[in-house]
Length: 202
Image 1 (spheres, rainbow, N blue to C red):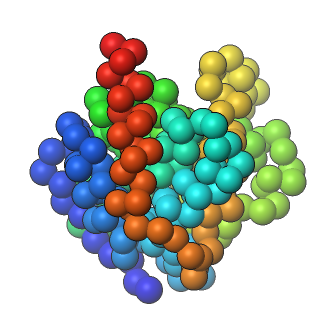
Image 2: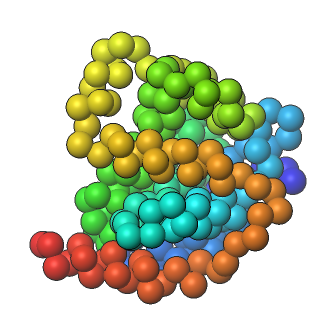
Image 3: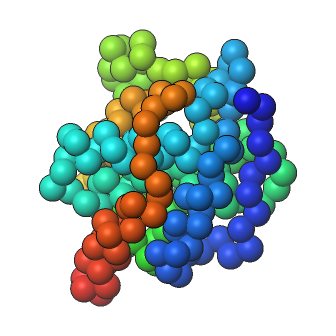
């Protein structure tokens, strides 16, 4: 598989569940890295695998599961024709902005934190560092590498840091090239449940 262009989505802010599902569908066949220095699994399959891991490990936390489902959408909603180093750094922030209005602040914050969580775990857990995929290892360089002691303290003070680490570990496990996954539309009921929780909390 070769690098595919990012999908242009005119409005970078989702306003409906349909927008989120459309972005998930658009991520099929799109890779953020491939070949000997990256991961060949496409973002669509990876996202579905991540959600399935979290559904098994944390079945009573729909927001965490949904965060796993949408955590890499920042790769496909950014304008442009190639995934750049800047996009690898910022895809958590752009993905969080995309889903926040529909799926709420906790899902958005977890999406935003999944890259810092990798940097934290690399700095604090040698076992985690040893299982990083080729793609995660390559992108770590442009994402800032292992956290500094100051950054570690800041991350540990984050209210959702533990949940972000759970998401990050599922993220790393969800890179099976031929992993079995469901369709994004099968996740509509859970997406709607989380959207309703967000609306009720407003």
